Length: 388
Image (cartoon, rainbow, N blue to C red; front, side, top):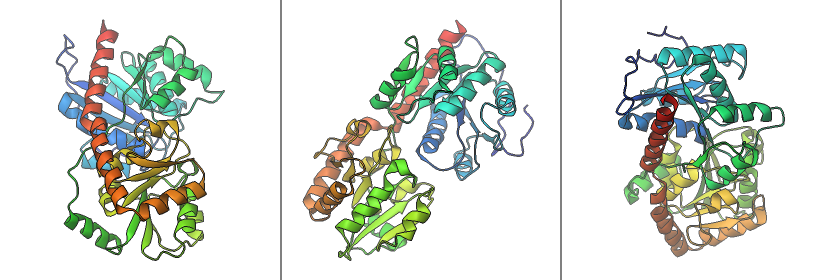
């Protein structure tokens, strides 16, 4: 049994000895991610690790970087987690700790999420012996020049590189060796029942929002790439004199101080909220003006909540939203165009209802159950091939 770590949420139990044949065995999957701060990638890992149990996947999460509230979310879902105490990625100490955890857990798969965690996972898989490395890429981004050689080696070790959407897949094919197997498994989210009018009213009361107001909302990190500055500017332009229109920002990040300092009236900062998607039914319109995206969970969650959306006209978003059918699209970074779209939906309840209804219908193509099933199938496929 592995020694209990003082930095663990829980300590994984000793797994049973590996058995043969492979078919029908439970797989032990270790997820490696940047840290335990709250974001879409981290929420993805929590959901995949938790839901995968029903399909025979035993999870363990290893977190580099900063500690944070995702530790409690994992504990809530009884997913064991070890925080690597801020050890720098690709350092001897980090690779030693990851390797130790892989061996103690007798991991079949080590699954890195985005470039840095994947490179650590691939290196540790070599040292641990017998663990299959995989990667999921959650953003449209390429490795820097210094990391390209390492990425090429890691790709040669990994039986699959996974993209969360088609735009991300194209990005991977732009830097990965031609021999690399690149597959797309689209992100999925839970598909809850629509909120009742009573539940919606209760949420508004909880947030201190007037019952008859128009509420725009955003869920995510307050980082430059998310375009939140453009959103606040657009809101100020569109509704400077409209006292019954509000903007709610759920999340925190490096821009929070600067955004608060603008003192735009009727902009509400809720900070970091675990299970923030549960607040979505309080909104009339969801807004996500990202400058770049992979496959945003918040955007899919808003669709599942039946919300009309105003968002950016970029390739990754056009994969899920049809302009004028489920969302209004504006050029990224264009506050004036975004303000126009906000005004359009604020004034037209019929269009809001139509966009929201069609968005919810389309969300059925992006279910969490389907996503987890596809990952389970891939895990078993690569492990079967590895052991042959």
